[in-house]
Image (cartoon, rainbow, N blue to C red):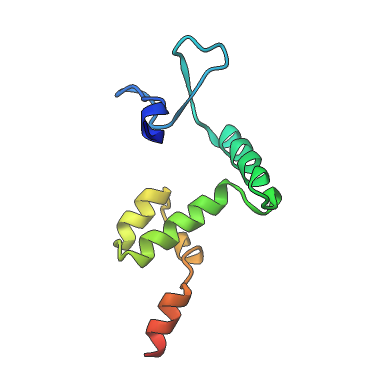
Length: 104
């Protein structure tokens, strides 16, 4: 058994990410920003990290950086992050690997 076999399946016409409702009975609710950050911080704290140093925004920045490093076209990065401007460029950071490549 793996982790995917224990996860919730979202309905085809529903939200992509869901959480089981506390009442159980196979009902789900959309995973929105607040429960995501609450769960993230709880798990970070359990792992010994300072939970206050992370937020949902960390994933937005990280997603843009990852996509940038993978060579994803800017139009798709903007679409993924729901940006209408080039604001995503503020969040793309060049990693050590990228900096070393530049020096070559």
